[in-house]
Length: 89
Figure 1 (spheres, one colour):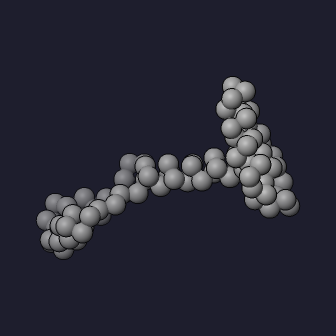
Figure 2 (cartoon, one colour):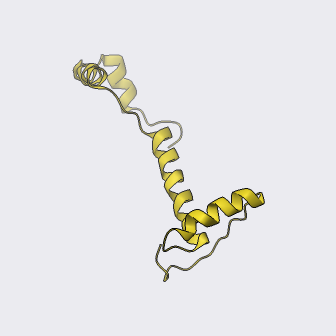
């Protein structure tokens, strides 16, 4: 996080004294402030969760099956459906 980025939002997290001390200790072991350390770890965790919930990873065998299925010609009915505009457009 660069210091020239304008901070426009804040996050308040209630913590027990023990949890606060643990986080403060971890931050003190780095060259980051407590806020910078916490924000960076929250951002990393958020990116991980988003990636984990929005990305499908297949093993090699499953990927091969998926690719083979994509090569199967589609029927006329499927082709007709693909030409329609979806209702949400």
